[in-house]
Length: 595
Ligand code: GTP
Ligand code: SPV
Ligand code: MN
Image 1 (spheres, rainbow, N blue to C red):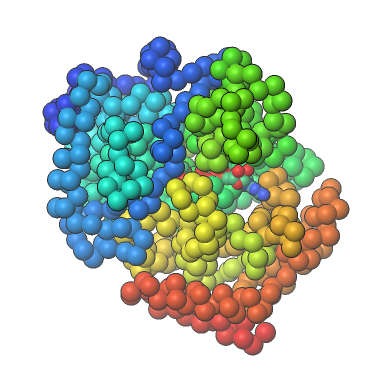
Image 2: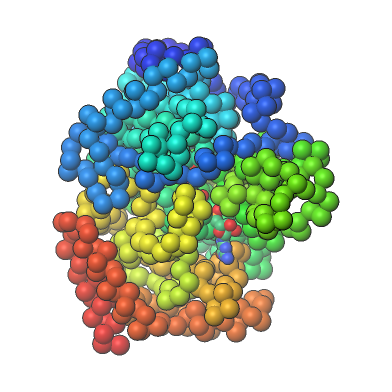
């Protein structure tokens, strides 16, 4: 490794953590590292060429209240970013990490969160240090890993230090919780202590790819969002539309980007996957809004993933691709994996262990109905394994963005889709995204809350500045994207989903692109333009969905008026919110009152 800045950084933290050995890794080391992890029992075989791992049972999701953005400028304090002074957090993390990797190997993972050669590449390089081999294997699948990405960068890389800690003795969830996940954003340094799971530990993904990236983007004129990104080609006209958008964690981004296989509605459309969790978005020198997925893999929610809901995802984790399953159920005799919604529950319990590693056959009667897999259990697979990955997914120039959508789990009020033409109203809609929290955040499943642009857990600076930054970036694009709010999760009185979702979600997206092209007019409402029933492609939709359709194409005025009051309180938390956002709010409220 020729970069002396990296060498100094590594030596410094090897000293602090007390690691016994230092090993620099590249993607090419994967096969050897897998063998070492298998030998150490950190990984178990899951059939031919796939793997299984279990994280500590109190370490199965991100923990928002333990996650902090620290800087030296109190003006960076927002409502959601848990801001703390860097001068307070850095010594605290150094203390926690001191000696905490004694006897372990410190792996050095040079990575890039962008396609090679992109105009944002200088914000995308980092070096994660970790004492956890499973984190190394996950990072190799999720990002571009190798020394070649950082050799020539001097000091221009994110320093991302991960120390697992003694998981059974960290007091998770108690007043004496030792876990601390800190992004020192103005120093481009990430210090995470006390977890080996997902976004807490794979620091390229959430901590750098979202939190640090968003902070850098604010200072340097680009957007970094928890967005999926997909492309739809109309094979008859040759036109291609790229749509990105944010739904809160575990609310359907991966499924939307992955499941829309080409044959969804006859043979006319071709749908390509670019990204399922993060998009970096900028306006290029020609004034074109563009975006790319900085990741190189998918960390997808396992629950309800099956051949019917998402055949593309199932294909991307087929035997031999090197996928890793985390916290699903595992059969120690047959090496099979299973999760709720995977298919019929195995009836022969022999060998089956639940996500905690406990034998299903030995469960006490009162636990008989407990899920076998954790609701936030996941599969990890690399983008090259995704059958509908776009041919140009590694194009450093990214793709033009034509539409931006927001959505989430909302049981009432939100129709299937409503299109928004005005940029300020689109940004306002993102800022007032309200939905049910999911198992991706520890302890909050089902809680209704606002989650601006789906970035609430990843916000790194103040919401007012964030809103202004959105207005500035999108405002600079010559051709504005169309905005829309979507909802696949409205429920009937009996609790059933009124919309079949998954692959059928292509129908409202096609309508949106036709609307943008002026091919359909839709129905104007105070909260946006919704499809006239006959404008939607309904071919082959099942009876129940056809019967429920009118409900999800309706605006409930009273419910929306009540919502406007909630929104007012929500927005009032953000000191200095741009006037354009308040104006958009008042326009919608007045239109509702007049309707
Ligand atoms: P993160 O990776 O946590 O950011 O999540 P995500 O937004 O990518 O969510 P994902 O696509 O993994 O979906 C989460 C859960 O929602 C899974 O259990 C899916 O099966 C379910 N889901 C996704 N799309 C739909 C849909 O259209 N309808 C219904 N009913 N469920 C869906
Ligand atoms: C999310 O929670 O939104 C994820 C998974 O994408 S994690 O990497 O754990 O944050
Ligand atoms: Mn996510």
